[in-house]
Length: 251
Image (cartoon, rainbow, N blue to C red; front, side, top):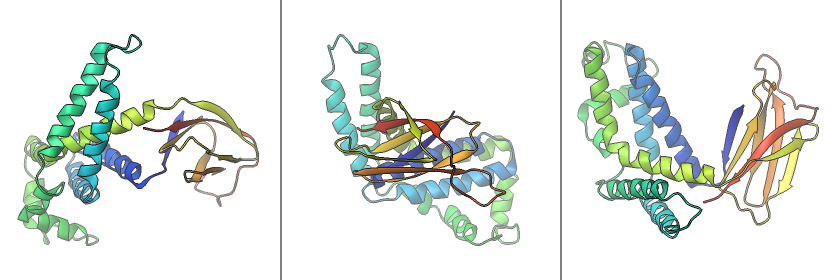
């Protein structure tokens, strides 16, 4: 099965982008290859750009406060496992404290590093990071693998509280919905959202179906069109009935 997610707010869109960048960084940084560490550093620059939104910290703090209040009210509920609840509350408290202690904009430590600033400037130029452009970067790339990996993790470390908050918020959001089975007649599906007011829509599709969903929507209406996934042909709509699972997620 393949999961497709569509955010219905700019806030959730930003969190999904951050989540993807954190996962991509992990994949690159854990490699032993020189070029993978190069990709990890470029991903770090992307992280700093996406996380630099002025309202990101305040929005995360507010959401963590709200979720903490909601979950704390469940203490003593016989239908809730107490140990799991306390773990989640503890994780929320730790992430909240970490974000509150962050000085300035997220990723400021990368912008204040002159060496990284020089690398980032050249990275914006196609082919601009050759050894004759950045000999110091070329030298860094030829340091031992463990030295490069350690440096990458130190540059990532100040993002840890933001990452924890993103994981908590998206985890609670995804767990809030229950999948429903639906059919797209002639490859099209449309419905009014009415009082659901979801923040995230998750669509699950069998991975052997040669199509992908094109999702558009707002808080009132949802439209899904299934189109051929084969990149070697002109993209066109699927004309057969498609079975899929749909989950509406709301915090």
